Length: 390
Image (spheres, helix red, strand yellow):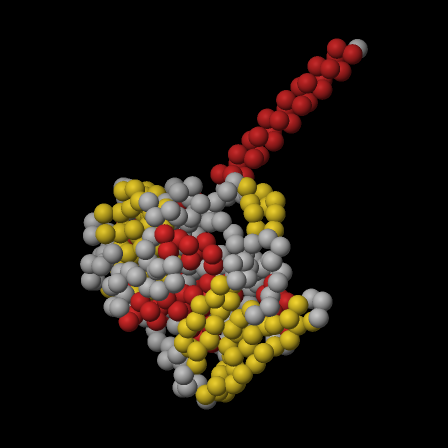
């Protein structure tokens, strides 16, 4: 009897181990991770900001959240004329650093096509991790240790999903804004491509955002959807951005191009106009078939498509959209990769990797990677500045 029970338990344990191992491997393959620790400063929001809102056409309100849980929080608020010189600071808790920048009310829609032969560094899906983003740019000589632009006339392409999940979203967005200004002075360009999570935030979907931002909105006397609405400076700035761009023969889009988009007959400029017009309109499947609904779809749309990695596409189907816009490749984020890689005979480059989080620890440990394009050469670039040709 004892031997029978022992055999039973042995088989049971072996079965559990096999199923458990399979489940872990399945989860890791699909990007799952175990959260095992938080930084002690995660919920400290003193000096958080700035949060900038239009009071009217001529006045901006600059707000910082200050205080602590024990003594209470308050809003440090100042008003400025829209066209005045407005210098502000963004503070980062973990290492007590900050950066200064100027708010310029002249927000313009970027061009869609660039052809200058200058080098490109691309990274995606930072998800509110300011330190990770900053340190990667320093290691790869896009900026120096004082956070000044050092990439000359190069292109820094941010391929969507720089918001949500992380606890440094405000710092990330203002850092991008700062770098845009500095790059332009040297003839360089920072390209902020809109991803599905930027869309979610503009449309008031905050299910994936850190708890911190519900608290921030409450302290500001607002609801969370106000943080990036049409009346917020960052919301207006985000709404000016493109969903897809062609840079030195390479397309950049957060999701990708569904084969049906190639049949639309639309130019890149028109594609962006259609998508941009819906930034503040949540999409739900419609019965009528139209190019507009295709481009905005949460399954087939430019900001959402996962077909390169989730569907059984032929080489011809993949190249339809790429050839449509006279490109050599398309660079995408959105769908997690084990490392930056090229697929479909080099036509598709996936750059979404699991980046480390500023305030949270996860296993397996993420390592930041990006993409460097120099002429016809493509390199996987690492967080320590090393690169390897693909």
